[in-house]
Length: 202
Image 1 (cartoon, rainbow, N blue to C red):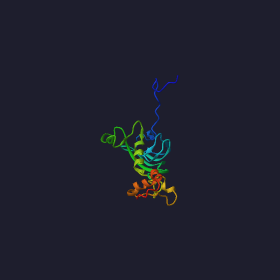
Image 2: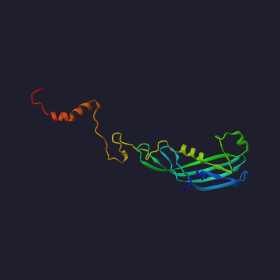
Image 3: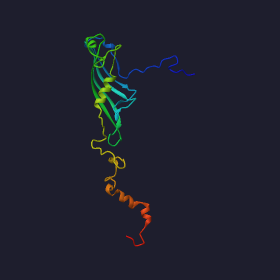
Image 4: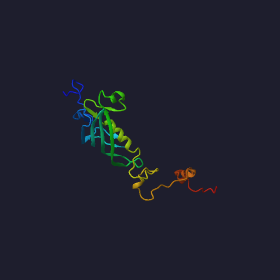
């Protein structure tokens, strides 16, 4: 019988994708650790219409440096993006590159004692987690209303077809709403079956 994680054993937690071990720095000011590698994210990062999709490899090109009060991480994060055009709803792909500069305070440092946790990250168990900083930077850099083309004409308001791929001159005959009821009477089957009046009435 298969055992579930709750039946006597714990589920193995996956490490956060952007945790960086900084034990090599040894809390020595000036110690430097270049970091160039890929990290795969388990879930999407971004906005409703455009994001870095889940299970995507994100490129990190970072400089991790020990300073007197903590660990300073700076550099560039790059990743591909997918989404849909805000006007025509067609799928779009692209890429995003954001710059990071984040200071993580050492435990028991002056910075640790004088700043709140939501103001600055912390070095925890000789590691720093860039996750929230990357999420925030990506969210600020992505457009709220992404477009497939700067001049995307959007969708036809009458039939919903994407105008960019429609035939030239695409449109629909519209009846003036003031004549709509009369047009309905003319097209009515009852009106057509009535035929001409043979009694000479006008």
